[in-house]
Length: 311
Length: 219
Image 1 (cartoon, rainbow over the protein chains, first blue to last red):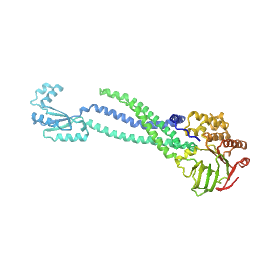
Image 2: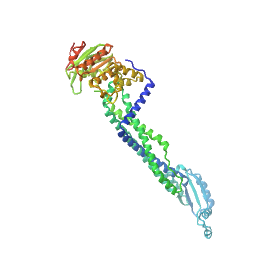
Image 3: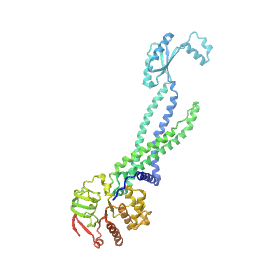
Image 4: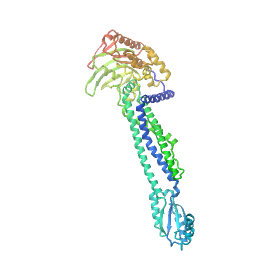
């Protein structure tokens, strides 16, 4: 009895053989293999698709980043020097990144130019517009609670008649976005778990249907690693092909959405186009599938293999 | 080569399959194991193949104490024993070649060596022309030969057989038995469980006879 020496070429060759053998087994049962792959594909495509949509919403809302500003309408009786002093005081606040003062006459001038009501405004006995301090909050303080407390602090100043947050809806959108993002993460986690279970169960059935083969292999001296290997590759193929299926599903679905989105963008005279994240997902989805597939197979094989012993 | 010392085997249902069994089979010997159904023949073979472990006593095979062999070493231990089964235990979705190659693939042999040894082994059992067939396309006797080719392909020092002629007619049985004799002549220790007394009584080898789990006589 001579044990062959370990040989890397043989080892790799064996792996490639087992890999192709597992693929061949999937191929020999095209219907049931395809169904499993489609189920895995949908389970992976769903969170990925939602993530793509969310990412697009985020892109849109980020375009309006500069639009988040607070307008402080000053009391009418605040003198201009005092207002300028207040402005430079506020400039020191850490929550404020940019600030500028606009006197009531500047406001009037701006309004005159924008509205085209020049002569009408001239006939007014006094300037009805208040002086304004326009504040751009620090980017890090755009969270709703932070911006709320800043707003309250500014409104409490005696010189301020009213502090108004422009684009409040944008902040709400962003907040909703974050909530949805967390929801998608949870959904993704749950669906990943279901992929794990689907593959685990498929492998369990494969193990059961090849019980006698496993017994024979163990009887002629096959180690657990040897018995495990084809099942791990089966999981590998299911996961990887499921990932590719997810990408195809997603690409197809997004191509259906694309033209109405372009119509919509045109109506808003926007340059917006759907970002597909196509290349990134073509890598991420199959790799996610691969990892889940091998992991699911590993767990399943570990649970069922030891139970099968020759008798 | 195979030494049993005061071996007991009790199953969980308290059935005692073997009681105080001691015997020794020398290296290079060929011996038969006989006895009625239920006398403990299968249990004895299972102890040698480490499918079961003894409840008490010592089993030594090829200088290894099976009582103490850890579970993870079982696969490598089994590679030293070729086993032939009554029902062949072939893989029906693989060709004859792949079936015979299995022990070599498991041992990690390289491609060329596998091809060479499988063909040599099939040649010895007279099935060289059938390597591309599926087992189902072969007769019972031929399937048994494939099983034997698989058992000897990695040249194990010990060859075990459990009722290898159980389903075969007398002529085929004699052929199979002479195959075992040929392997024995080149030094393999051969131990065959059978109740084909008509056949083995014509052969000059020792018989170990079991009766209700005890050694009845050695002839």
